[in-house]
Image (cartoon, rainbow, N blue to C red):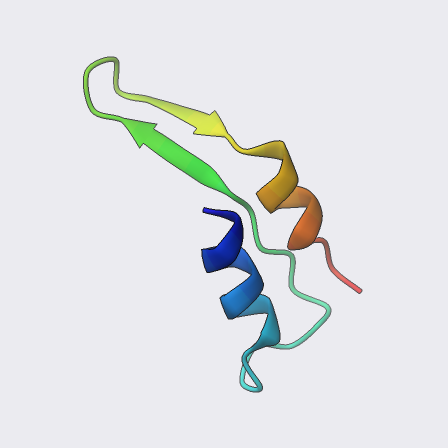
Length: 45
């Protein structure tokens, strides 16, 4: 998950002022579970 957010953040077509969040969808419960390290890495600049 963290690697995915870092890859998106580094892409030249993604503006730095747009935040990128990291969540995992739990198919059993239907809940979104935040991945704090991924959300922190995707913080807007």
